[in-house]
Image 1 (cartoon, protein in one colour):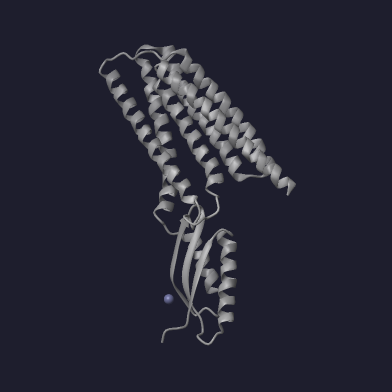
Image 2: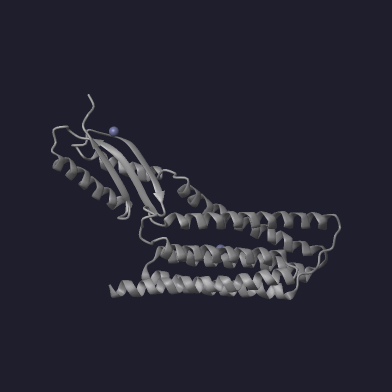
Amino acid sequence: MENQHSELREINKVTLVGIIVNFLLSGIKISAGLLGNSNALFADGLHSLSDFSTDIVAYLGARFGKKPPDDYHNYGYGKYESLATLIIALFLGFVALQIFINGFSTILSVLRGDILATPSWWAFFAALASILLNEGLFRYALAVGKKINSDSIVANAWHHRSDGWTSIGALIGVGGAILLGGRWIVLDPVAAIIVSLLVLKVAVHIFIPAIRELMDFTLHKKELKKIYSTIEEYEEILDYHKLRSRKAGGKTVLEFHIVLDGDFSLKKSHDIADALEKELKGILGNSAIITIHIEPPSR
Ligand SMILES: [Zn+2]
Ligand SMILES: [Zn+2]
């Protein structure tokens, strides 16, 4: 128990450090991008802002979303988390498209002979700071994740390293634009376009599971197959139908009818449904909401 507590504290700490660093980085890079004439840094700053906001939603969602059901929210508060995630994904996708279009039209204007303003060294140093901080975050989170054996922390660590790579892209764009000057300043919007595509990818990646959950998508085929084979293991269950599944805030909701011998006692029938429910919870998690309707064969 004590061990579990200290692990939770470590997870909270590493998550909070990530949130704070991303907040600082988004402020530094967005202002360096705006004041230092760098589209690439602005795009990279936006990426940090998106990481910051999704981490906040994940963090608050883990607290608020797990609030127990009440009279007005019989299925709990989980969908608030999906809704917030969806809004972030839409916002992110919208801004990524803006940066993409902006970068594209800037490149076109260079091709028409326009000379761009040179990005300032501030933008260069902001990119450098971002690379170093993300690499530091990566090493810290990886060490913690390995120590407490947490896949999600390790995955998050690799996200920090990929953020560092994004900043390396921005650094090359800004550095090339400053050092080579003239027409080469076009390297900055080129880097911005590449970063915007990475942001767009993140947006799609977080949009899909959120919309699936909000629109009552069924479970994945693999999970459904496991459910079918579990039900079919019961010899007493003659048939089953009207199986419906969906997700509600991380919980699985499952309902179906089973057909049992009409001469079974109520107790026996209920025992079968109970045992099946328990076994399904072993697959779907204890928070799953499972409703089983019992009926005799129709002749
Ligand atoms: Zn990221
Ligand atoms: Zn039925």
